[in-house]
Image (tube, rainbow, N blue to C red):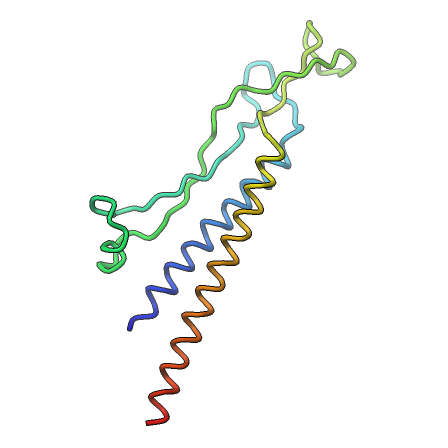
Length: 143
């Protein structure tokens, strides 16, 4: 059995989940940054996970043929800024409104927790594949 495919799948999953944690942290860090009125401020990001080179979406066949593993890309959400009425803020416009990026902190925290759990599951899968490979080597030594 080729354990390198199991290791590659787990490693690709860990990379994608690490990116999800990084993006959630980036969004949370910029949740309260001011957005200019022209909309050129921080845009919340999302991770888009997909597979490359998968014919007909058959992931199992793609892995067998050594094709696409899961890929992750960061994309801007394009959400409109969150407008808050804060007339005392020195950056408020003429109507007393201040624009912030459309970041929902609860959603980002839940996404970060899901990504951390998925990362842990990929680590567990990789460790199990490693254990199975070592046990298979030990069986060969006993013979």
